Image (tube, rainbow, N blue to C red; front, top):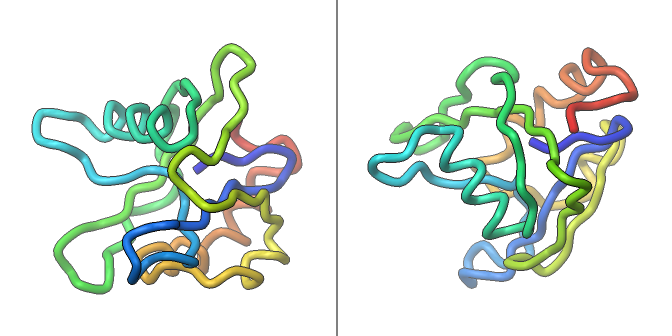
Length: 129
């Protein structure tokens, strides 16, 4: 998750059709042979055009609704002044805790959305990146 100034970065999916128009956090599946950190760095480069340093895990594993995987949230630091761009998404928004309900989330991201107000409050205004 990328948090700056108390706002978390959310991205609107453009594909596949069943996910288009729904929102998610940057990241994705860990490919065979990758660590969580390597997968997150790769996904941030592919989806957002940014280089990141993957920092500490944030919160516990969040089991996904289908029960076949868990969502792990990591803090990242943007490197070399990189700024995220919507390369694979229709749109991006920086959301405060009070704005989290303003977008329709993908089911996989809803459990962490429920935890975010607490996490954002604990982080303070500086955020993670």
